[in-house]
Length: 111
Length: 115
Image (tube, rainbow over all chains, first blue to last red; front, side, top):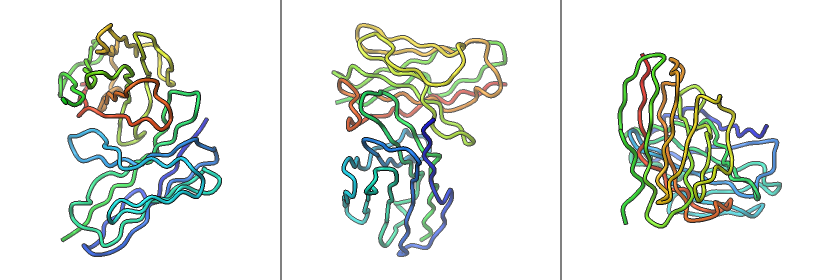
């Protein structure tokens, strides 16, 4: 059974601080996606990474896919209150139509 | 373009009852997936439909079932409800073949409470 473990589960920081969220697995994935979910809404896709070692940047967010395609990280620079939410990583494989989600990291950024 | 819509948004049922949830995908999307989200288990895959056929199924009991209509709208049904079925049920649509790099667009979910 493929599993994705996210850490930390909960993070409360001050505005302006940096943070990193990790997503780890013992399995290889063809792609890994990061989502953000706000209360009362469904998850919204932030990024998809498909190549081992790939780094993608989205404004203050930096996503990295591990060389072996088993892990990923999300780094936020100078966090803002608007970054508050539940961050989910999700892995998928070629030939399957099932996406495995991590349990999520709940981020709270205080003004 | 309208997003994924789910109805109803909130539902309260009692143990033993059954429930049907509805999902309308984004126009032109043919793949619909269903997920259950709970605080303890996170987001868990229920099943995925493409062109009215179930292509994959998660590890849920047979009380959970679904179907997809010719217009790609999908329904899921839960029979003989249990307290543990209380959750947010999310529907997601994708354009076509649900390749691993496809974007899934999620609806706002249906919050089911079983008393």
